[in-house]
Length: 93
Image (cartoon, rainbow, N blue to C red):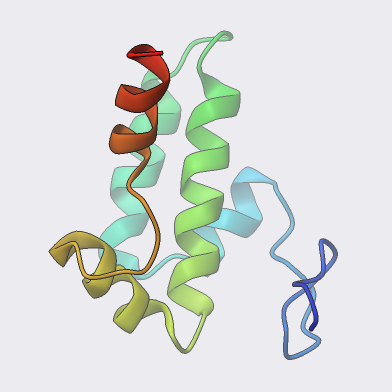
């Protein structure tokens, strides 16, 4: 058994740098303007979260399996337990 590396992808490519310019460059053009809009509206308490969320999206867009994974998550057919179900269980303890 192997685990995904924290320092790159399963195919050996390094992750996208977590900078605004690198994330913007990695996004499809249709997503880039939304990224810039959200970054421009973020304040000092939210900008890190905005960058992190879009960095994850950029990584997903770059993954050749990304479309399949995204479709499975949105349709509810991805393996695993949804975070909302886990949180409900924890709340009911």
